[in-house]
Length: 90
Image 1 (cartoon, rainbow, N blue to C red):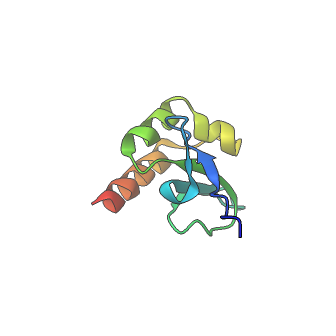
Image 2: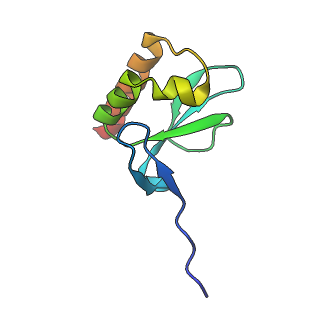
């Protein structure tokens, strides 16, 4: 049997291609709400970042989430995402 291919995704912060399981999915729900999806199963448009707050900050400064999701994202949403990411790292 051939070994299964590992799905690869690009981090919006650092731009590196990594296995999907190593990254965290950010999702824009059909209602327009943006949040982190640690399970990877929420419905909506997804984008991926590394499990570091630095990559989240790089993606925020370059407005990569806004380009990926085609919508304006408030600063309060970024703050909640940063807090969730830091809590998950501990």
